[in-house]
Each structure stands twice: as C-alpha cells, then as structure tokens.
Image (cartoon, rainbow over all chains, first blue to last red; front, side, top):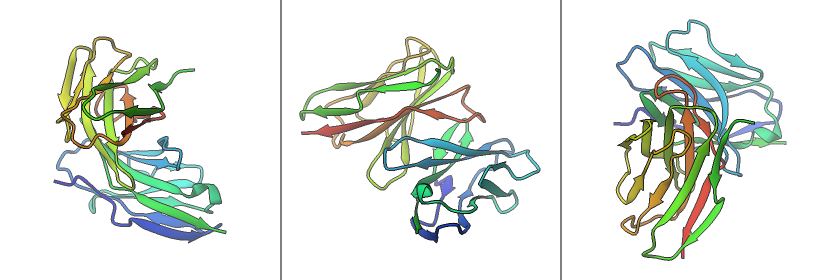
Length: 111
Length: 113
C-alpha cells in the first residue's frame, strides 16, 4: 500500500511567489518522522526540512515551512519567495522503521 | 568532513555481468539503505541494514545482493538476474532506522550496454 502520496507530478510558479507542494501519508503508528528532500538535475538529494509526529508547531527552515495537519495526515511543503534555483524535483518522505518516499513533484520556477 | 561516498559516479556494464556499487560513510551511522531511481520516478528501496552483519530486503530486492561486514560500508551487487538494471542508484545512511533524517551519497548511474 502506498504510504506517501504526492499528487502533483509537475508545478509551475512565478519567481518570488510562494508555492505549496502537497504530501499525504498513511500510517497508524503514532511515532514517525516526515521529511522533504530536493533533488536538482545533478541527482543529489538535499535535505530541506523535518517534522516529528509529536511536534506541535510546524517546522520552518529559512524559506521552507512544513504545513503539518496530523488529523488529515498531510505534510505540505511551502516555499516562500521562489527562486530560479528552486527548480528541481521535490520528494516527501516518511521515516517509519525505514524510509518511504513519494513519487515526487517537479517544480519549475519561471522568471 | 563527514559524509557518504558512492563510487563510481558512472558505470557501464555488459549484459550478463555482475557489478558492485560502493557506498562508504564516515558518519558513524548504524542504518544504511540502497535505493533505485528510474527517470522521472521516485525512490524505491532495494535493501537496508540496521546493524553490522544484518540486512533486510526492501521492495525490489530481486536481482540484487548486499553485505554489511563493516559499519561504514554497504556495497550493492547488481547481478545478472536483474532484468533491467539501468538506473540511478542512491545510497543513504541515518543514525538509526526510525525518526532520524537520511543522508545521501551523490549516486551512481548504471547503464547496461
């Protein structure tokens, strides 16, 4: 069964605007971690942000924030003030004994 | 600097040959992972290891083998039994399986010729 779902295969955003990348997850465990990674065309995986299932506040890291809605089982990534260098694949992941990854969202930032 | 090193970056293999991808980490992490990524797709787990001398199959283990004789090393062998081995392979490690983030290597791009 799919544990991580990213429903947006591709998205466009205008430079300097904010964008939200969707992620939903499926687990009955109470303790888990949620992550977002960025993968530029070079292939490396860059860690962006982490949210623990017991964290009450949404995680933030610079221009990245994670909109965590536990009851809805969603962990959307919000990128504020998009930059051209944000164009990449973005993966949502859940740590639950091992790591489960979504299928990714390809973000294109337009000048 | 601590990190994960994968080698080689590019690898070409003839059909019917086994090939081994290297993954070394100096982060003192217990858990290590191998993922396969096909073009435009997500990451699929091949094998993972939580401790030395122990490893478990992931979702697509057929045609692959691993070993974990040392904490810092987790090599992946792509055997001739793997029908479609051309892909991008990523190695990762974390403090332990569970809630800690995974650190990734730069990846190895394997092409069967």
